[in-house]
Image (cartoon, rainbow, N blue to C red; front, side, top):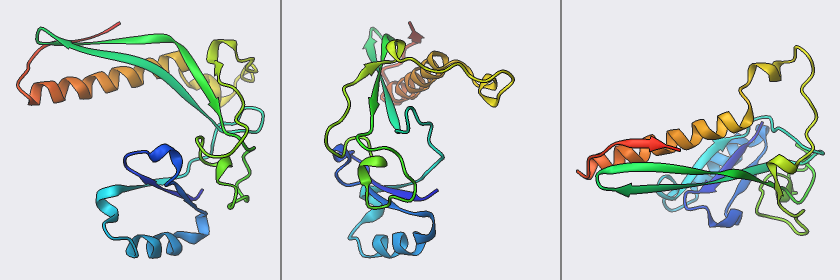
Length: 165
């Protein structure tokens, strides 16, 4: 896959640049031409995407972290929102940034709840069976974020426990 150059503060996908696999030199030249790329930008390698109906997508799960009385708790919403890219994924369509970046493009399909999405069953004996179910993966991500938050709270001297519900 290629490379994504992303602003570290997000910027709603407007600052994302995609560099195809063979254009690593162009990425490096672009970085050299920037004022302070290491302070403001992140380079991310593209991984083969999981597609639904030919489109990339992102998942959004809302988690509320509460620091109170020396402890940190996390509360994960059970609904997970699926946001589809506005253009079908085509790795050779370098100029179509909307196929690579979720926030860009026009005519986005409406968001869908993950539980309402008709997903095909994985093939019998396929590699997908080795993966934990998606809600488990999301819960693990939320727990990881809780651990990072707890470490930050401890560094500030606020102490406390961590729990996840």
